[in-house]
Image 1 (tube, rainbow, N blue to C red):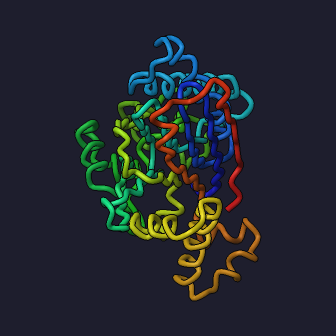
Image 2 (image 1 turned 90 degrees about the vertical axis):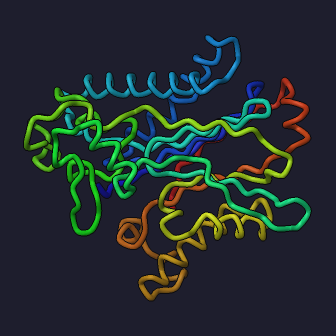
Length: 316
C-alpha cells in the first residue's frame, strides 16, 4: 500500500499535553479522521473520569475513534467501498502531571533522550511498542490468535505481511481486515482474502506504556517509520541534542533524507528537489514532532491559560 498521508497534532491545556502522529495508508481519510476525532474523544473520556488520565482513558478514546471511523465506512460503502481499505497508524503521547503515557498502533515510534547524570552523555530509550509483521513477536502473536490459519503472515519479496497484504497488525481503519462484512466485492481482488478466516485479523487496541517523568528526561522524539527506516534511536537523539530546539525536527528529516539518498548514491539536494510523487520511490513519509520537557512547568502544573492547539499536514 503506497498512498501515504500523514497528519500530526499537539494539544495543550489543563490536563497537560497531547501529541499525535498519524501515518496513513491507502488514502488520506483515516489519518484526517483520527486527527479530527481522537483528541476530542480523549477529552470526552477524560471528562467522564473527572479530568483524570489513565491508560484506560486513552484506550477508550482509541476504541471510540475506531467505532466512529467504521461507522463512516459503513455509510460510504454503497458509493465508495474503497474506504474500507484506508487506515492509519497512530502514535499518541499524553503528559499528565508527572507521567507520560504512550499509546501506539502500528510502526511509528517515540524515543526519549535522557541525560546520564552530569556527564553530558545523552542516551536513547524507546518508549513505544511497534506492531509490524517484520517483528518476530508480532508474527508469533498473530499465529497464536489464528492457530488454524497457516497464511496469517506471509513473506513476499523478503518482507513479512499480514495475510500477504499489509505490514502493520494494528491500526485505526483497515476495516476490510477486521469485519468480514467489508471483505467482499466490489473491493479490488488484491484486498479480498481467498479463504474464510476468523475476523478481526487486525486490531485497534493500542499498546499503552506509562513512564514516570524523571529530572534527567530531556526530550521526546515522536516520528513515523519513515524516519526510523534511516536513523537509529541513538542517531536521532544525538542530532536533537546537538541542534537548537527550533531546528531539531528539520534536522532529523534532513538527516533521514540524506541517508535515503546515500543508499541510492544520490545527494540530499537531489532528493529534496524531487516532486513528491517521485520521491515516494526513494523514501516513505517522514512525520516528526520533538517535545522538549520543561521540568519547572511539569513540577508546577499547567496554568489555566496554558492552551495550545497545532495541527499539521506533513509534506516530507
